[in-house]
Image (cartoon, rainbow, N blue to C red; front, side, top):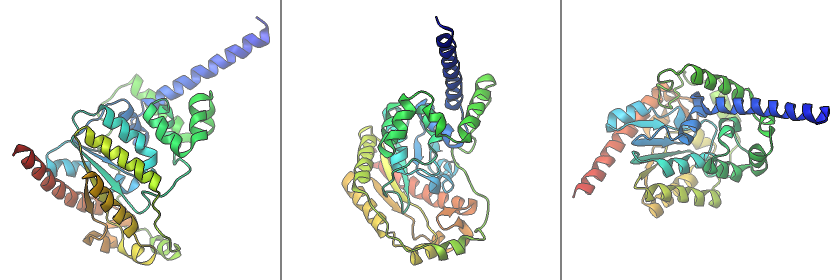
Length: 321
């Protein structure tokens, strides 16, 4: 073998080995959003009550409170920065393997059904791009990046942030020295701060906009709901509290509310609307216009837990008859 070919092949093998070790580390990370993706793909979580959503529910719903209220194990699989189309693969993977789960909560906000053409923080997902459900969902959003990340050697490393390599180190630490529960908050990420100093200015500077509904995304949403229901799971659709002043001045959220009402009517899912609850009137419960702080999350989680407990009780009673 010619020296150039030999050393070229050895260089490629070394790079491939390093890439394998990086990806393996990331897949074993239990840190934040990457950890949630890994848990779903590894089929390692199957609570009776599962929550899916974006940062709105990641910071706004405490699964420990839901579990206390409903007497059911709960987990919050909401992922910061992602809309349904991006995390759809996790929902579909969960539907495919789950056996213990009975209830799924989809948490929505004003941007839930808007069109998107770019992934948010793809490094949370790309180590699992060989999973078919994850791949298909991500490919729908940004096909070129996702196809290359799966099939072009080393391409993904040109797109990910430092967080990917941080998760690789965390994952290898878990492999080398396994420890106890590294997710004591069960996916919940409370934000313990008050109304931000620039939040009022942000509202004043935000231009009025119209809430958009993409019918193609809605159809995929309907498909995931029906798949969950086909597996015997009850689906709840939740619109969270939103600071009232923002949505009085800037936009009308009735398009997304009306769409959720329509979806509930079509599928038989239950729609729970908290967008105009008493929580929405007070800055005390928010750190910005669309995100609850820890105090607001506790109050909202308690209200949601009470409602779910009542509805689940009715479901159980109906089954017993």
